[in-house]
Length: 232
Length: 141
Image: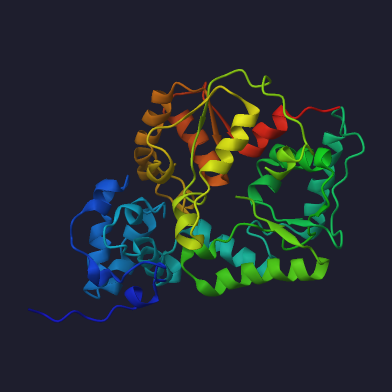
């Protein structure tokens, strides 16, 4: 019997609070049965656990397997041994060579590091979009005096935004604004680093994950906001 | 919930007329349970119920809910065929519910279900955010 190689993927995957390392796998296949991606392009969560267990990091990171997953957690939910399968997959993604990670994610992450948002939208353009949509809302009865409290200090609630809402889905900005307006909420929107989506979570890069979180923490401190609202 | 309970906003339960179904995003359910020890299954349903009496659960739901198929960054890859095939179960589940409005509180699920309803030829299926349904039901004085 050959000895198992050590696996970085296995050791860097965060442990579930009640979870166990990949070595506990019984090979029962419950994860595979519960996963909607099983069988598509050879995907199988059990295969991923097995590869991490045997230390086949390079083979796993070079395959398309980690990127086919939606990280939905159905496999883990079913696993009788509580193995952190999603964590293994995320760690495997982090080991993928930079030029082999999906282009959209790579570009978004570069933009995030450079400009504080995934779109690379400048502060001025962001302000223009927000004001424009607010003016449209002013045309609706009951919202004539609505304004967006950009950069307001001491608000109860600081909102971050999903980048979609200042890109292709501007019209969906107004739902929360209407609710806030009628509830007379004390809220604010930061003029920069408003990005609420953290692609470092998907790409498996903890450094990028941290930068995105730091951006938000700095906004909270700068504006003295008490609560934080994420887009989802 | 706080706004509704305290009366800071008032909702009209008769504004939405069609049959509604609720979808649990992984981030509100399985992921939240894993990371924070609590899954938000009750709260969004409580809010939806304040907006309309005519809503149902998709089957299976909560912990066993089918994933939308667009999460985890998959929508950002070029694996579109795989993503589409993956969603066949989600679409079957939605069809089975008989609902024409799917309510989701997640941007990924929203984008994916909307795109897949197009791909699978269900142009009459509407997809809305939970807070959008709340905003649509607001009583404006």
